[in-house]
Image 1: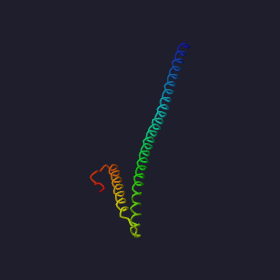
Image 2 (image 1 turned 120 degrees about the vertical axis):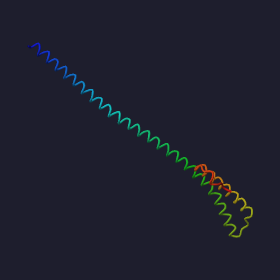
Image 3 (image 1 turned 45 degrees about the vertical axis):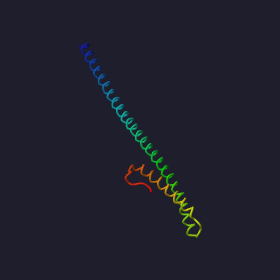
Image 4 (image 1 turned 60 degrees about the vertical axis):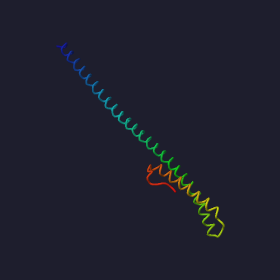
Length: 128
């Protein structure tokens, strides 16, 4: 009987060992799966962050161009205002008016062209 008991004991130990190995493998697999989900989630957040940073960069570049464009139209507007004030003051402005008007029209056309390029809607008309 001792031989049969030893065989049963060994079989039970092998079964317990196999069960422990299976449980250990399942625990490792579950832990790896959770780790992988966290890593994938982190990479997805990194990708979204990179997209947002690229979009912000594009918008800042566009805003910078728009500010430069507005600055370019402000100078002719100031010239025209100066000529108007000179005329109101009674100073001779005949040549100045023509130059100021030309500058204002040129700046208006540049601004209109830039804005039409931004909104991609050419049917709104152009500057005269």
